[in-house]
Image (cartoon, rainbow, N blue to C red; front, top):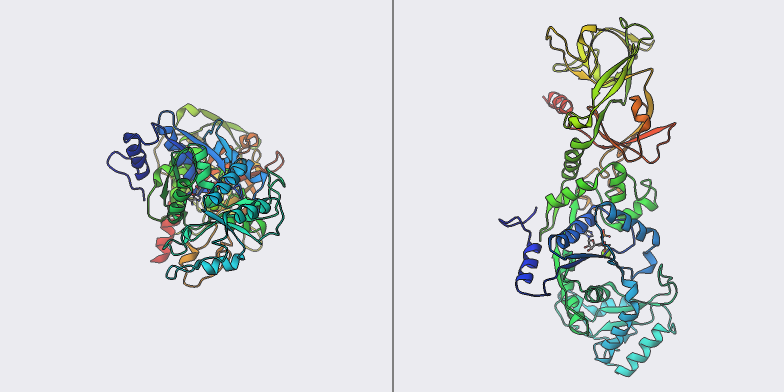
Amino acid sequence: MATSDASGSNFIERVIAEDLAGGRFGNRVVTRFPPEPNGYLHIGHAKSICLNFGLAAEHAGGRCHLRFDDTNPAKETVEYVDSIMADVRWLGFDWADRLYYASDYFEQLYQFALHLIAQGKAYVCNLSADQVKSYRGTLTECGKNSPCRENSMAENLDLFQRMRAGEFADGSYVLRAKIDMTSPNLNMRDPVLYRIRRESHHRTGDTWCIYPMYDYTHPISDALEGITHSICTLEFEDHRPFYDWVLDNLPVPCHPQQIEFARLNLSYTVMSKRKLLELVDKAHVRGWDDPRLPTIAGLRRRGFTPEAIRNFAELIGVAKRESTVDMALLEYCLREDLNKRAKRVMAVLRPLKVVISNYPENQVEELDAENNPEDPGMGTRKLPFSREIWIEQDDFREDPPKKFFRLSPGKEIRLKHAYYIRCDEVVKDAKGGIIELRCSYDPESRGGWSKDGRKVLGTSHWVSAAHAVDAEVRLYDKLLSVANPAEEKEARDFKEYLNPNSLEILKGCKVEPGLAAAKPGELFQFLRQGYFCLDSDSTPEQLVFNRSVTLRDSWVKIEKTQQDK
Ligand code: ATP
Ligand code: MG
């Protein structure tokens, strides 16, 4: 996990501190978050956002730019641009007036390409994409020079200008850097700088039919914006020599330092935008904000808070070595946050009717219930109690196993905030299915305590049947049924590992009446069930809640170990 030294700083912070101490870059720290708008952001991006904006915030006058790396119009859309801005803001970060688009540099990038050609450092090549690939060689074999490599500068200038003017078909020519086809680093074997692509761009329209490659665009964008530290993921380590080559060979205003760190991998889910897009496009999920996805939009809809995600990013830290973080850690961060702030309420997910025979018909009492034992400042509310209530089916067993501390025939439990009840009778239908329980209550135990101090088995949540509001509740489980498809013995498509039970929809759940006024996104702890939030699909007629995360359920564990014996 995190590699931090005694002062608690990570290796990137140490590099920056050394640079500042040595007077490099003046006294400035300027970072950037550079997403390509070809999908929604995911939790891995959140790590990068927290890191880049965090580093800028740690230094007086530090800044972090939001820059869209929009050089591949075929896959990029305004919808993605908008969603990315919304997600970064929601995470709690502010780029102020530092919003940039690589596409704003298209003219400058083109001029720099002319400069490289004029310096004899770039040439137009007519090899097809496949030929470029086969001429490149391999890790063990040198590459071969392109037949175009020694063309004259005048010829290259002419061809490149005509590429821009739209005289050639897509794919007929590319502009390449002239570096070294024998370099041990494949990225230095005359990489492609420009390609012809007739594709409308979401910002520049049809102005361009040639588009610069990411590896060429990125260092120049960084330099033009005065970035000091260009932080990216480990797979770009081998690209750094080219990053530096571009900047060393152009009259750019500065030369940022590229620093690589290990990307975040999470168990039981997928993170690449390509795979996420596939799940959305093929309707394996309900959209980019499906609460099962690790997208920021999905996590938000599921009930995650920016605080929980930022804390998660802090806990995992940054390292130089790849690792996989357990999903449980992300869930832990959410529980920690919601424990402090979520209002406790009662909701019965799988209802079982209880009739309290000795409770007066038509009587309704208003009982006091605390909203959060962790925070008395959150106050109390009134809960209606009456003769018929709902309890959880799981809270009753006709044949209780050992250590079942809930309701069973002849046994007594406490109803949270209410009374003790004892089960007197189990009413069944013709097939033996349980329809309802007949119980009696102890009027002396109001508030859930008895003067004689007798012990009851356990405490159940409940909702008054006459006052309950119906709700749909969506329970989510892991997206994949294996921690990491790549580690499975058989190499199968990741979609074959989708967990068929990742979504369970419960209808006819009974929630306490106050929840009718909940607002989308509002978070609650359903006592003993977990944390839930109101989904945006919710209407006043049909409440819909998402389970954000479970509470740890000790009973499941006990039952399991009993079965195992
Ligand atoms: P993906 O592979 O998921 O499509 P990407 O790297 O292509 O992601 P970009 O939009 O290019 O997505 O990423 C923007 C920034 O976020 C980059 O600096 C990238 O390094 C960083 N980033 C992307 N994925 C992760 C991750 N899993 N962990 C940490 N940082 C990430
Ligand atoms: Mg990318």
